[in-house]
Image (cartoon, rainbow, N blue to C red; front, top):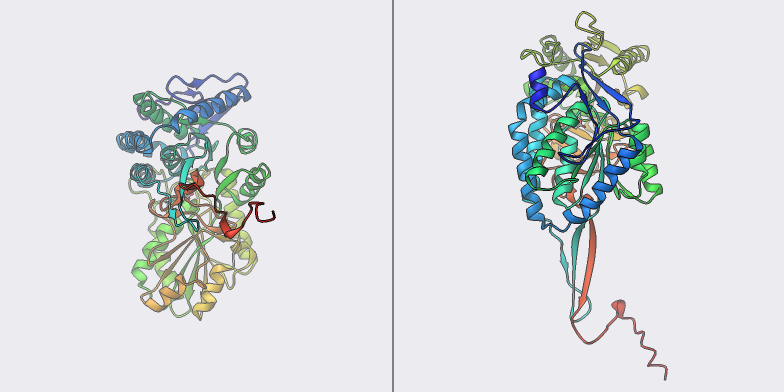
Length: 511
Ligand code: UN1
């Protein structure tokens, strides 16, 4: 472990406020966050939280750096992101391993997360030459109209423990090519991954003889997070986390008329029709429900299967679950690591009990595995006769609720009858059924997949969802527009001043 941490520049005790290589700020008065390995409870390292003085320091650095950074031509900004992508490539394995160590996801998923960071850098480099605005035909003769996109300012990025790197990268890589600087408040559960990433960005900023583009503020949500959310100097807050915290963030940002991008909880389902390819479905369910120990916002939480195939599907899925090796996420044969903390385990155990008390049948797992460690659990499969309120909640754990249906309309109705709207999927070999699911009356989610599970989205699409998921979009497609301000420009190149809508306002007609 020591050599891994050394490679990433992590010490036993780390500072948590930074704006560049020489910009690690010592906190007077900041408390310590202890980062522990959820697999064995061992301390990996500590990080100092930002004091109010270091907060001010970082904010002023992010604000002054913005003034210079925004002047750099976007394709040149892209060069820095190209080098960031390359630096991440060089650190693919150690950074992936640190993510596994600190968060508990298995090694291939830790590495996959870093790959996702690299992918978004590649995307952002291309984007740096494609920040296109439209031109419009003016209704007035001799007038030209177009829109241009300007950087918006320092962007506040608040991320969650389950993906300690990728959502930062979706925001940071895109915001940086857009000309913004970034102030990152990572989850207090995964501060070391954040310190490692900051070290990588520092190296890249130094190579480019700059600083203050990527800034870090480690601290607790209710203190530093809240201060950031209420800070008028931050025109945009991008928040990933729970619905309840997202609601507070949204209100506070709206109260100061700032902008927010919210990526909140999901309650993602797969509909399995009578003509689905069962082999394909079973593989997708396994990755979707068990992957990342059920702690992705895109995790498959509900399976809505046609009554004619539900029993076969349950048998097949249970067969796969029986082969899931649970244990140290860095062991190559392990498919499911620990949960993140005691609270998460308790929430899971409680939900499994509540489901049974409300008429559900526990078909598989759902118990603690104390012999492996206090944070290990078996994934649970629960057959539900109907979609009770508990199933409409997101329990951030590997619990799969299975329900059945007769008619596709009923399945879509069950599917959409939850408050969240992030990711969705249908397994079918019937094109009509698939198109029905994708039509306006079909899935109400931000992501809709056919013959692909609910999790594991590529960076090229816009990522996010509707309803209580918060409506934000990050990552690919045109999500970059959220990180810039649009300016509509009209130029009159004549000696006349015609008004729009044909209005005459000369005062001469009277006399
Ligand atoms: C998250 O859980 O917050 O689609 C992000 C996925 C990943 C991202 C998940 N690409 O599952």
